[in-house]
Length: 526
Image (cartoon, rainbow, N blue to C red; front, top):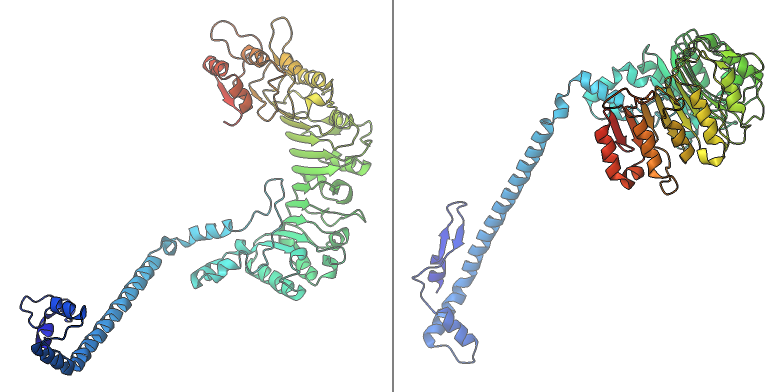
C-alpha cells in the first residue's frame, strides 16, 4: 500500500515538485474495501491487518516527506507572489515614468501654472476673496510637487506677482509675523514684475495701519499695477506719500466716509476706476479723472461726484448705479463726455422715479454707441435725448413694463427718439400687447426703430395666455425682409430671439416664419 501511494506521485515539469496523479498499477486494499469496513463493524482479514500494520510503521516517514514537499510548494508560491508584486510595481513605475506630464515643455507648464491662479478681476466684476498665502493654495502647492516644478515655479516672477493680503482669512492659519514673512517672499520671488494687489482688513480694529505688514506693502507701491481694496479710510490715507507710477486699475470694494483718500491723485497711468455698491468712491477717492478710460460707480450724485464726472473727458466706458438719494446735485450745467462709447446706468430702489431720466438728460455723449438702462422702480421714465446722439446703435432696457400703466407708452416714446438703434434687447418680467403693437411696422404711420436688425426678448416673461400670439407674428412678419417688391421702411429685421415657451406654444407658425425670414430667427436658448 505504501509503495503504491508513493508511485502515484509524479514530478511536475514546470516547478520540479511532485503532483498527485492516478496510477493504474495501484495494489493493496481498495478504496471500496476500506469504505465497506468503515461502514460496518466487521473485522478485517489477516492480510489486511498486516498491510495496515506496515502502513502505520511507514506513515511517519511518508508524512514527513509530504510536509517537506508542502513547505517547498509554499516557498515556491511565495516566490511567485513576490515576483508578481515586483512586476506590478515595475509596471506602475514605467507608467509613471512614461506619463506625458514629464514631457510637457517648461514653456507650456509655465502657462498651466499661471492658469492655476484665480482671476484677480473678471472684467469689471469682482471675484470671490482668495487667500494665496494659505499653504494649501497656489502658488505654494506648485512649488511642493517635485524638484523640477519647484525650480520652474521659483523662476516665474509672474506666478508670485498676485499678492492677496486678506487679514480676515489669516486668523486660523497665519500670524502677523508669518504674514510679513510670506509677503516678503512674494515680493522677492516676483522680482521686478508689476504686482496685482488685493488688500482686505479683518475689522476696523484689525486693519492695516495696526498690522506689521503695512511698511512692507508701502515699500512695494512703485510696482503696483492693479489694486483691489476693501480697506478703511485710515488704511487708504496711510498710502499717501508713496509713489504709484505703474498703477493702471483701482477697484474699491469697501470704504467708510471718515475722510478723503488722495493717495492716487498723481498716479500717471491710472486708466480704470471701479467701485462696488455702497462705496461712493467718486465722493471720497481722488484720482486723475481726466485720464480715466473706464469707470464703474455707485453714487448719489453729490456735488463732488458730479464735479468728478465732469472731469472724465477721455472716458470710453461708464457703468453708473444711482444711489437712493431723493435729489440730484447735477445742476443746470451738462456733463459732457465727448469720448464715451458705452454707458450702463441704473437707478436704486426707493429713489425718485425721474432721477435716472434727469441724469441721462444732463449727459452729453456725442459718439455713444451702446446704452443700457435698468429700472428697479415701478415707473420707467426715460430721457429726452439730445439730437447729437445719432450714433446710438445698441440699446438694452431692463424693467417691468407691467408694473405701471404708462411704462409701455414711455418706452415707445423713448424708442421713437432713438431711430438709429439697430439692436434692441428687452429684459424684464413682462411684455405688453401695447409694446408689440408699437413695434409693428405699418404703412400709415411712422415706424419705431426703422433701422432695427436684431430684437432680443428671450429674457422676458411673455404671458402667452393674455397676449394673443397673432400680435407677436404680426410684429415679427411686418419687420421681415420682403421676398419680392419694395420692403416697407423698418422691415429689415435679421435676428429675433424669443423665450422657449413662446416657441413651444406656436411651433408650426414659428417654423413658417423661419422659412420666410432671410436672416436668423432663433429661440431663446439657441
